[in-house]
Each structure stands twice: as C-alpha cells, then as structure tokens.
View (cartoon, rainbow, N blue to C red):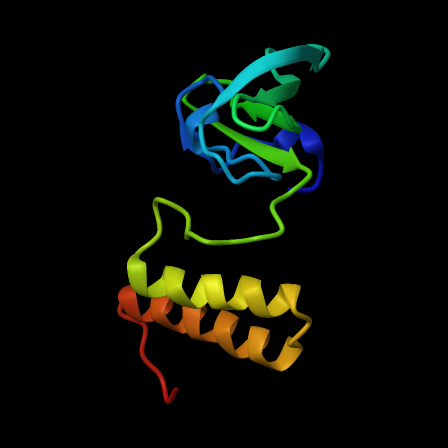
Length: 140
C-alpha cells in the first residue's frame, strides 16, 4: 500500500461496513463491545472512495480506540487500522491456520520483549509453514 486511499482495495474483510466484532479494546482486551462515539469521513475527489475515521467507546472499560477504515470501490471488502494498537496478544487472527498462528503469536510476543533473534526465527517459521501449505519445496 503506497497511499492511504488504497486501504481496503486489495485485501481485507468481507463486507462494505466496519467489522467492529473483529476489534478488541486496546486497554481491557474486550472484543466486539463498542459504540460509535464519533464518525468523520474524507471523500476522494472524482471517486466513490471514502476514508472513514471512527472513535469507538468500549462498553466494558469506557476506553476509546480510533479506527481508520475504508471499503473498496465495489463495497465488497474493507480493511481497518486501530490506534492505540494492542500491547498484549493472547489470540491469533481468526482466519489464520492454527500452526501458523502459534508461530505468529510467539513472534509478536518476542518483538514486544525485544528478543530480536527469537522474533526473526518465529516469523521465519510461520512463513515456512504457510509456504509449505502451498506445496512449496526446497532445502529448508
């Protein structure tokens, strides 16, 4: 992605609306328990493309997260970025295979702890499993 207006164009989640059920509170880690406190949007000139800026209030801890999101021009997929991002990772993304997700979780945790060598090994292992799942072959 070279510009923010490409968010949601090539990859993302099904549907043209924000999937709040996929968002976890950065403070209490509660998932899918939000109400919209504020919404703004910026329309791209000469296009249907809109960039959305939502502030969501957590129903559990009353913390706020900012969600920047956009859907593609065909209204079939969308993607989002959340601030602040979570500092603790206790689960893998829903759509990932279990084996790859295990390595991904370990990589995220070792990055947080600044164990750079271990993080590189875990990220490599996750990538290796993903490629082997696509029938890649090689020496390693």
